[in-house]
Image 1 (cartoon, rainbow, N blue to C red):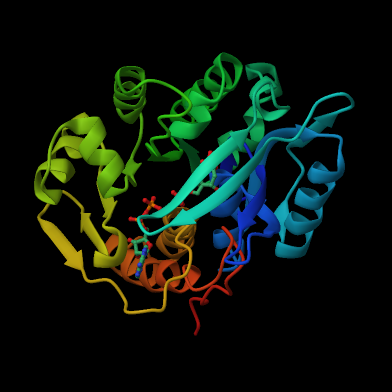
Image 2 (cartoon, rainbow, N blue to C red):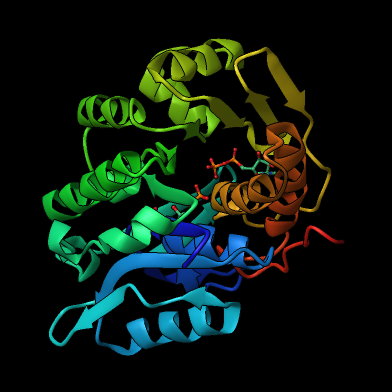
Length: 296
Ligand SMILES: Nc1ncnc2c1ncn2[C@@H]1O[C@H](COP(=O)(O)OP(=O)(O)O)[C@@H](O)[C@H]1O
Ligand SMILES: O=C(O)C(=O)C[C@H](O)[C@H](O)COP(=O)(O)O
């Protein structure tokens, strides 16, 4: 039995360095979330399909090393693991994908381990899980249906990736899915684009109105705004030497869930996750920087 089950697309990462070379690593939002939560000693599993290739092997090695359960990770010969490049400029980072028809995009609802979902405390998915392909979207929806039917807590990050679908489709699909979710974890820029609201207070209100009990709205270097429906508490950002914020939102989400499982205190969980996510930005790569642990 795992505490947290995440569904989506793991990706092999190539992260551009100042000298023009590419640092290899592991990414894909749900894999990042799993690793962040596992580093906080949560028992975490991933539901995904990856390629039977070198990149898939590297991901598997990393999950084994990090203590992420791969019981529900499948792979088939002839399918490819998705890859992405991270590039940096004065405005931050951007992603370039090589993931069309990837193994992960072919996960179907028949691959969903219903009994594992029925037993997990938290089930996590993102807008990327819904955007990658029709099959993965259907599988993700099914996982959420099973979680809801079994009274599990569903956690969702809209994680807008405009390279994968249109803003209109992203809006319609993520707002619909939010109605079945308990905890919403959007980032400010994504939430502004998706909701049309500007201020954190308006955005938090909007996600509560869709049904979320808890909203943790991440504000980049400015920290996080968290709400249990009784007012917004803003936790300021930590001052760190940021080199690459890739995966910071995922680190926040994974650490938040691990901490929330211990205390069910959303404000305390957000404060811990805010510190860990800040430190995750101090090295290149989605999961490279050492995370702080709950006990540190
Ligand atoms: N430059 C930064 N300095 C300090 N903390 C940061 C920085 N960037 C991100 N963080 C931390 O990571 C969290 C998630 O970052 P954010 O950019 O909001 O998410 P996303 O990557 O999903 O857009 C923030 O709430 C904050 O805790
Ligand atoms: O874009 C995708 O599909 C990916 O999964 C690649 C990245 O690993 C995550 O997107 C990072 O997510 P953030 O935590 O929001 O920086």
